[in-house]
Amino acid sequence: MACLVGQKNAPLATGFMPVVGDDARVLILGSMPGVRSLQATEYYAHPRNSFWPIMQTLFDIDGELPYAQRLEPLMRRGIALWDVLRLCEREGSLDSAIKRETMVANDFETFLSMHTTIRAIFFNGVKAEQEFQRLVMPTLSYIEGIHYQRLPSTSPAMAALSREQKLQQWSVIAEVLAS
Image (cartoon, rainbow, N blue to C red; front, side):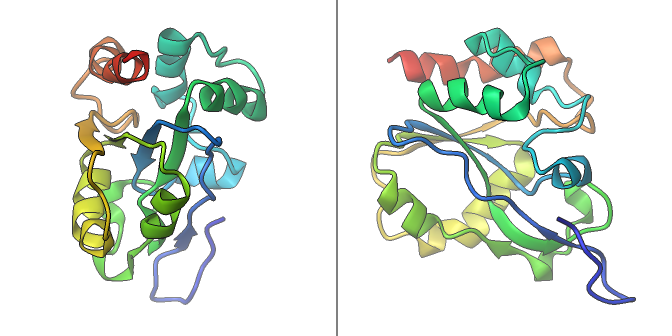
C-alpha cells in the first residue's frame, strides 16, 4: 500500500506479488499499480480501467466476479500478471508522476528462472516497456525464446484509443495462447 516516507517525498508505492500459475505462458506487465489498485490490493482495480473488460471479452472471464475468482480462470489459461516496478515514489496514479531515481525493479531473473514456461511478455503501456528495457533487460542472463510486445495501456488515462481499439490490439494474447 502507498505510504508517506517524508514531507518532501512523494508517497512510496510498493507493488504486489505476481499472480502466476505453474504453467504460465504469457506474462502481462504493468509499470506500478495505481492508487485505486493499491488501496484495493487488486491489479487493475480502477473501475474505468479496460483490463478486466478486455479479459472478459477475450477469455470469457466475468468482470463482476470477486477478484480472486477472476484470477483463477486467468491463471488456468496460462496468463500471469505482475509489474516492472517493485517500489517507486509517485504522487497519484500516473506513470508520468513516477520519480525516476526512486524506481526499483522486481526480480525478473529469479521469476523467469522459476517460470520457464513463459514464452511471451506483453507490456501494458509504454512506461512498462521502457522501464523493463532500462532496469530489467541488463540484469537478465537468459532471455532467449521470449517474445516481447507493447500493447496500449488499459488505463483510463490512455484515452487516445477506445476500448474497442485496445481490445483489437490486446487480442494478440489470445492468438499467442492458441498457438
